[in-house]
Image 1: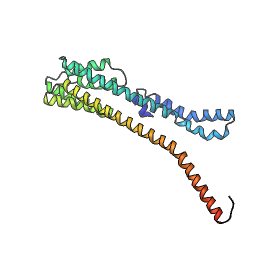
Image 2 (image 1 turned 180 degrees about the horizontal axis):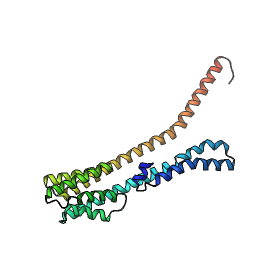
Image 3 (image 1 turned 90 degrees about the vertical axis):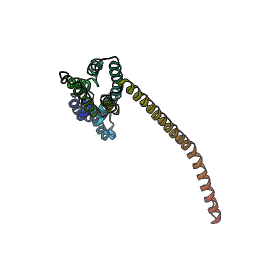
Image 4 (image 1 turned 60 degrees about the vertical axis):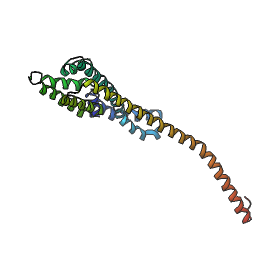
Length: 228
């Protein structure tokens, strides 16, 4: 729970979640005792995991928001760079308009870049930007962040227009998402068809089995002279 609380930007929630985890089973057990549901008392132990499930859900929602913010920040950085702004200023501008949960990561990148702004060698400044974004990608554990860091590396190494690479990358990502969405849709349709077939087939086959079984018992009964 410490990991979830830290990633969603509220590390103080971890201590609260641990306290609630130990208090919830006692509270649920007391409620069950008052209403007389003694048989459900062991189920009160499940309340221990409620804070974990809540933080896990909030963490997943934060990750989805992080992906959307990263996509918007990448576009903003690419467009500002294409307009003639230095890459350092573009990242600082993206950091200034971005909210949590991406903002702390971009702030760390801006701090790392700010330490190299006094350097006279432009290549050294660009290399610092690339290294800062590679570090951010490792912390985020998102393929989109790693891909953007790789695009920055290629742009700095081969002097390739960053915007062209960005839009090509976004187009590829869009096609990949469409393919994955189509695959999930087809899997869902297959599962629904399978469940529907089972729902219709089980009663029919059950009836046939009972009919054949009853007929077999009747034949055996007639053979042994037993009336069934």
